[in-house]
Length: 256
Image 1 (cartoon, rainbow, N blue to C red):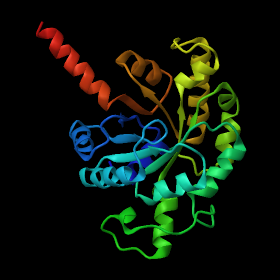
Image 2 (image 1 turned 30 degrees about the vertical axis):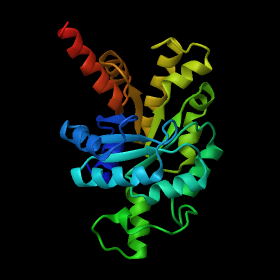
Image 3 (image 1 turned 90 degrees about the horizontal axis):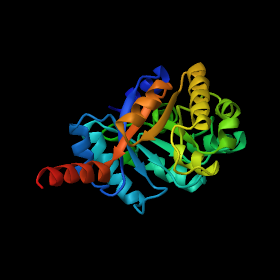
Image 4 (image 1 turned 90 degrees about the vertical axis):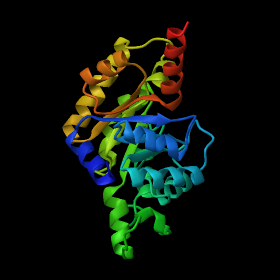
């Protein structure tokens, strides 16, 4: 899946499955998940010690095997947002967004003028094999890169409508952070609680009204069904280490 198709999936709210690279952020893993039929990869800079040089190589490989990449940056700072986009990834995700003011700042950092205030300094790798003028490069970045945010607290969910509206149509997807949401409520080991259910349904309804995707990471088939039933469309299933560990454990058990 290329970035334009991913953008269309977000707008049309079609279900789109990805997975997360955590422990094995290497080109071979990108190829493996592309062969397995996943449509996009979540690359994590918030809770993963990899750097932008690794992201660059993964994005190059992903482009070659036609699987999209979305990178979660660690902060809302301009440097993280702009430099990550400069690697040529298909989209970025900004965690811990709670206010409309944060959303407006993210747009300024992620978009070139006249939409935002991002500085021009793109490397050729961001455009693959295409030859583009500066005007075309700016349009490509502003129009085709997928912009996502994460709402991870009750405050964020309460402000969801105002946050999305502050993006003025430049937001493609809203992700929930269910574990952090439950931590904020003091219930870290609880899943599918009434509070989470209400928050999930609220975000799904708001996103449906505005024709943008709403996403979430899921770890089990039961969890996947739970979120799909609540109208979530952009999902990741498990992660690289979970796939390897679960398969290895099942095989070892069968050999006993």
